[in-house]
Amino acid sequence: MNISDKKIERITQVAKLYYNDNLTQNEIADNLKISRPMVSVLLNEARSLGIVTITVNDVSNTRQLHENRIKDQFNFKNVIVVKDGKSPEETDINVSKTALQYCFEKAKSNASIGIGWGSMIGKMTDYAQRQEHPLHLNGKIFPLIGGIGATYRSYHTNEIIRILSTYTGLEAKYCYLPAFFNSAEEKKIVQNLQTYREYKENCATMNMAIISISNYPSYPDLGVVYRYEDLLSKHKSVGRLLAHYYDAMGQIILPKVDNAIQVSIEELKKTSNVTAICSSLLKPESLIGALRVGVIKNVIIPESLAAKIII
Image: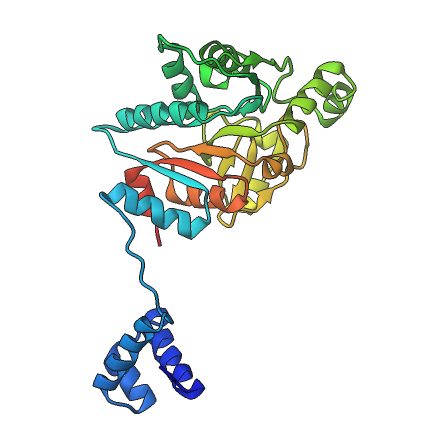
């Protein structure tokens, strides 16, 4: 079939107005001074010529629909939407179970896995501790940040590593450093120690990271007044990754005092497989801001929260 370039241009113009600009056929007809039936004919020709292709995705439930839309919206490798439980606590347990299976069952040989902290990491660890059939993975596992003396075990990073090492079979590489020193000067002194160098070597060889996202403000406050003074309120922080705070656009807010021992945002960006585990209590603006930081490649999220971030 021979079609002139002028007609192809007109067909493409009509298709763009209809599919890209969401104009009705009547609106297109009025704009282009043609009849509404002619618009319909041109749209049919656009499909028959391959100018317009329509793909029907195989979606069997709303969770799969959310997964596809979030993938497209944030350009993710993998999105797993988990069915909500009867309560926020039950939902978070469901997410933590899914995270444990997804992250470690897909781990490759010679894995080098960095683990964050927070309530969802703690729940995942609790679930791992109850498993009767451990895995037999090859590689190492280590904390992405030092520990603190909080009452919650989810911030005791070496304990998290010990439990996950027992479950996975990965070699535990502990970090015997606190997450925060009393000053930036103290941190500089520690950077000359072998313990610190080993920690940085682990981060440099990392091929997988598992982290959680927290709202701002959150518990524990991680000495934010000393580290940031008024910067977090001034720059309107919405959330935290490890001890990195960010705004709604995903911009990292730099502290006035750099006294933290944690993997850097740049190191996370270089890691090909970074999975974020999301709580049902996470605010949509906290999640969106975290996704915009640009370090997360995979996300495991409750269904109700997924629905709130889709445009």
